[in-house]
Amino acid sequence: MENYRAQIPRSAHLLIIVFLSLLLPLCESNQILIKGGTVVNAHHREVADVYIEDGIIAAVQKNIMVGDGVKIIDATGKYVMPGGIDPHTHLAMEFMGTETIDDFFSGQAAALAGGTTMHIDFVIPVNGSLSAGYEAYVKKAERSAMDYGFHMAITKWDETVSREMEVMVKENGINSFKFFMAYKGSLMISDELLLEGFKKCKSLGALAMVHAENGDAVFEGQKRMIELGITGPEGHALSRPPVLEGEATSRAIRLAGFVNTPLYVVHVMSIDAMGEIAKARKSGQKVIGETVVSALVLNDSVLWDSDFQTAAKYVMSPPIRAPGHGKALQGALSTGVLQLVGTDHCTFNSTQKAMGIDDFRKIPNGVNGINIFQSASGQLSVTDFVRVTSTECARIFNIYPRKGAILVGSDADIIILNPNSSFEITANTHHYRTDTNVYEGRGGKGKVEVTIAGGRIVWEKDELNAVPGSGKYVKMAPFNYMFEGLERADAEYLSSLRAPVTRRAMHTT
Image (cartoon, rainbow, N blue to C red):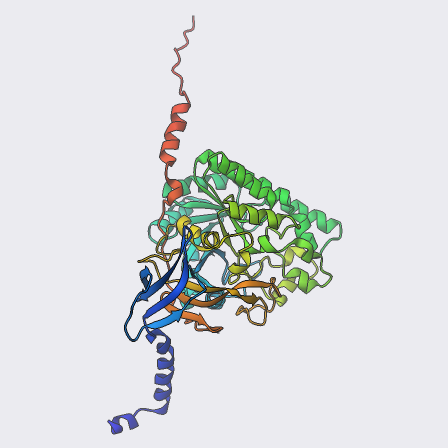
């Protein structure tokens, strides 16, 4: 044996050491017992133990007894919650002449440190091709450190796109398609395309999503600001006021109602858009409203900062709004007018943001946020916090109760949150690749002390153990709960037409 070992070159020994160092995290105990915590689901809370085996929750009950070899975590006095599910992220996205600075590994590592254990990213087609876009994002996600899913954007319309939508739903596990009503000249689509897309989504059981801003009016607003000599970041907010978000939200809702298909409005930023969603839901229409953390806790005064770098980091679309909008959105989230919260994590560093130093139209749009769900707690109870940051997302995208719950059989994606421990957000420790943070200095009570993803402890004692390639792609089935009753509604519509009318033939003499 010694002779054999002697024959192994030193370089091979080094390779073995590297291999074992990569393998070691995967060889940790596959059994974990979380003892004595308050288990919080969207519908109830209880003091109980949670036993995890092979990445799955095996038991939730009091006084679970285990043998040797089981990792035990004392959660007494702490909340044991489902990990956050972020429905709105843009990792490694090519946009506005550059690419978001966080790739799938860096973005997900940051997410895990903040208690998010799954996200759904937006696939952008390549030259309009959904298949090419999907393949590109599969490659981008190879180093994923946590579970993820995909939405798909639609940027043009023809029979090829229509057929590819079917492939995405039936073979690739994508059950949602996003339509941009803004970004004229790049991603924006017409009302005609929107109607075609809505009809196709309905037939496939896929959820239609919209970025709701009136792109034509925004384009006009941008020209107006430039003509007035307003070229800084404040021009971004002034060129796309809340009324344009409200108009587009209203239009999308009415067109979805005309087709009779469910609608999901992404990143609701204003009272104007929220009001349209509230009105539609009150009338019985199937509309989902997603807000984002930046809308809840920031206001647009930062865009008037005299330092360009400071102001530019807050540029996103729709824009962060004036004081008052955030409080109203927090209230809407707590009362169920809005159903869930995401982050729209779309990060660019200061150098990238400086592309628009002489023209706000060239500032890459996007802010950070994938790891700061705890900042969204606001007016929410602890059960409502779980509902809007995890459970409702899982329900909407048809992955509940595999995700979004601490129940027997659910994936072991769990966080342990200490309600008495404080956190502070800073660029020095946020794990992103960007050099700034729009939530710099913000903090509060409720610190994520442990994150468990897929049954592995990936965040504990302020140490991150994210493993590239350990994340799995989660396929999401079509026809979620929002599609229930659509056929009946269609039948009632047809019976209400009293048409076509049978008329006697006209006789001429």
